[in-house]
Length: 453
Ligand code: GLU
Image 1 (cartoon, rainbow, N blue to C red):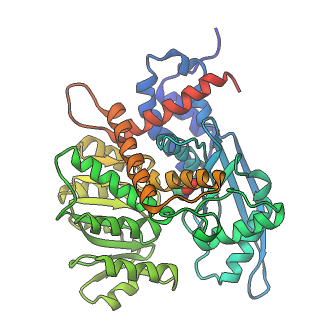
Image 2 (cartoon, rainbow, N blue to C red; image 1 turned 90 degrees about the vertical axis):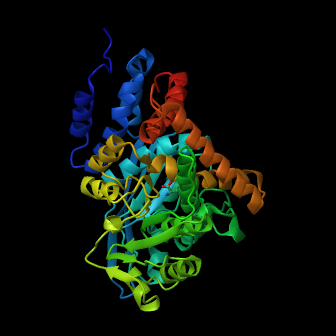
Image 3 (cartoon, rainbow, N blue to C red; image 1 turned 120 degrees about the vertical axis):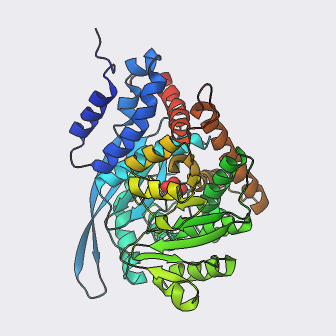
């Protein structure tokens, strides 16, 4: 008999752990997906026979390289760079680049794995990838960041391409870094192509790409609330993070009539009982993007607010809805229990895997409205997909058209989650299960069509 994937779930996870030693984030992400996929494929022999889950959980390739650069004091610095190309069954590899000291191969493998499902959910033709480096942009001059980005691209360029692999931004990589990397790619290859997304509007970027992740996560939250006959008007929202995703989520919550109580960074969170209104959100954007300052400075400007330091996270603040928009594993099982105890009934993840496995189980068991990042934060990569389309046809779409497309895509993802996340005899939607199955099915069916490759 042929070797089959008919091992039970614990044996499958044990195999993933054994093959990926010292990679807890990757094993965590695969476990969360496998828990749902095992249910779904129980009676679907061909997914077992062709080892589809086993193959999606093994990246097509992991490229690791040295990145050398010179700091302003003339010291030679050495960092490690990676690109994880997880799966290109439904389109070119696509996913961001992260610069942060916490970046490891495990973190990038988990992100590339998640990206594969997320990108499939958007309905656009994009495979899954992710890249980055343990470079810490914090405290570096713009020239240092430029030299690092150029050195990083000097190796990366040979592995990417508009029809091969299209990176974008992520934590620590915004418009400035994309500019430096795109400039270096163009210099080396002498080609102006859509090889990166998140570009500036003057050089091939798309309108609303910057806003798309945070806006999309809020639209998804709204779709979930609608299933209960609610909207965001008058609701209190707790948001973590203060980067691109968090500030645009805060902006959209304000626009839709909610009140934003918190934002955070790695040093702690600010709590503003009067609400972080649009003018305050603009101030935070300026603080983070132009002055590259810390969120603690908020309380000097807006004296009614409090700062909670020591790396504290905002989950103890009572709220109706929560949006973790900072980073992975920032919300654990105890935080999840506390949120529910304080009345939180909807959570939309703007970050990737911000809730740890225990937290996910707490939310699932409590049957609150809980949207995993791969569904809720897909708006960013979706508009990246639209940027790719515009680049291929060398045109720029209008803002109002793009806004409409983003809303359509988020509603489409919500619909897919409802289709696969419901259960007979209950009106509860398990969005984690729905997102996992809908994303898996699309990639899996393409893989089946290709045979054993
Ligand atoms: N880094 C974002 C994400 O996690 C965006 C990726 C992209 O636009 O390719 O989905």
